[in-house]
Length: 471
Ligand SMILES: [Zn+2]
Ligand SMILES: [Zn+2]
Image (cartoon, rainbow, N blue to C red; front, side, top):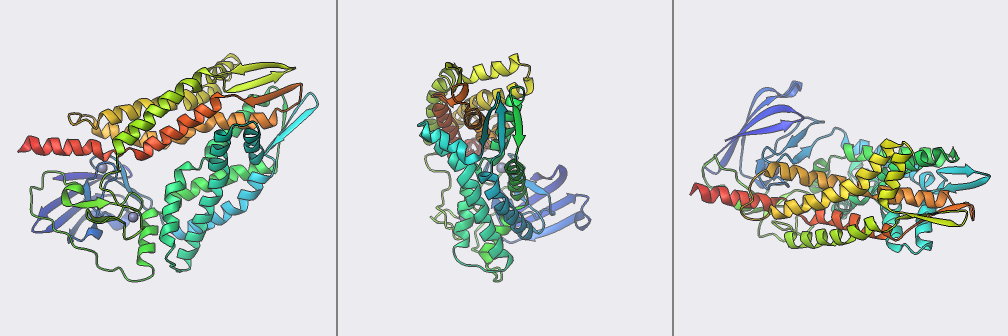
C-alpha cells in the first residue's frame, strides 16, 4: 500500500509493508534537503516507540523523522503528526524570558488615552476587566481575566520553568505534569485576539477623538509577538522525548505483536489494541489506564464524546439567540441611552464607511459562531454509521473549528476597552449590555465542544464499513 506523506508540500512517497511481525518502511524522499536526497530504506521492528497514531483518524503510522522546520502530515486525513524545529529548547527559553519581561509593563501600564472635548480616558488591561466586574458582568469578567491576563502569565511561567530545566538538564519528576498543564491550557490564552480588539478600538475611535499611545501598547504588541513565536518554536515531541528520557539512555519499549495481514488495508491503532495519549501522543496498550510518559488518563476514544458534544452544541444554540437579539452595548450621550445589538454595531461600521472593520466584526461575531455550530452539527451527524463520505474534508473542518474558536471573543474585548476609554461622565459613556454574557457562553460552549469531539469516531465507522464490505 502506498502512502503519500507530505513534508511541507514536497511529496514524499512512503510505502510500508507488513510481514512476519515486522513492518518494513520504504521511504522515497524527494526533498531538497541535502541529507535526505534519494531513496532511503528503513526496516523497523515492532516496538511501540517506532510508531505513532494519527489524532484525527487513528491511523497507525511508522515514525518518520522530518527534516527540521518541516512537518509530517497524516496521509489519510491531513492532520499534522509532528513538526520539527531546531534548537527548540534554547529558543523557547529565550522567548519565555523575553515574554516574562514584557508581561508586567504590558498589563500594568496604560495602553492608550482618548481625548475628546476636554475629557480624557485611559485604559490598561486590568481596568477593562475590573469594569465588567463592577458592572456585574461576572462571567464576561472571568473570561477576560482568565484568557487575557492570568493565562498568558501562567503559560509563560510554565514554558520558562520547563525550558530552563531542560536546557540545564535537570529532570525533576514534576516536569511531565508542568508540560501537560501547559498543553491543556494553551488554547484558552487569547492575547492575540485582545490585540486585534485594541486595533479595532483605535480605528473605531479615530474619527471621534484624539488618541495618545503609551509604552504599555508597545509592550503588549511585543508580548503578543513573543507568545506567537513560542508556539512556533516549541517542538512538543522533542520536549516529551527529552522529559521521558530524563538524561538517561533510551530504554527498550514494550513490544507488540503485529500479525501478518493484508498490507492493502489501513490499520488503526484501536484495531491493533493500541491507544494514543491525547496529551503527549505516546502509544500504549489498550489495557493501560494512565500514560506512562505524561501521567494523563488514557482513553481509546474521548469518553462520551458524541453526547457531550451534542449537549454543548445545543447549549450554544440556546445562548446564540439572546446573544444576537439583545443589546450588547449601551452608549450614553448627554443622558440619552442608545442600546445596540451585535448586528447594529456592524451596520454602524458599514454606514460610516469602515467596511474592513465591519467585515472583521461580522466574521468574528456572527460567521464564526454560526460556522462552529453548523460545522459541529455536521460532524456529529457524521458519527452516524452510514455516513462515510467526505471524511477528509470533515476532519479538515474540525481542525479549522478548533483553530478559530477563540477569535469570537473579539467583540467582547472591544467593548471592554471602549467601556474604560469612553467614560466622560454625563457627556458620554459606553457600557456593556446583557448580550455580552450570553455571547461569552456561546464562545465557551463551542470551544468546549471542539475539545470534547473526537474526529476518530467518524473514521471508525468508515474503517468498520470498509472492512465489512471487503468480507
Ligand atoms: Zn489521520
Ligand atoms: Zn501521555
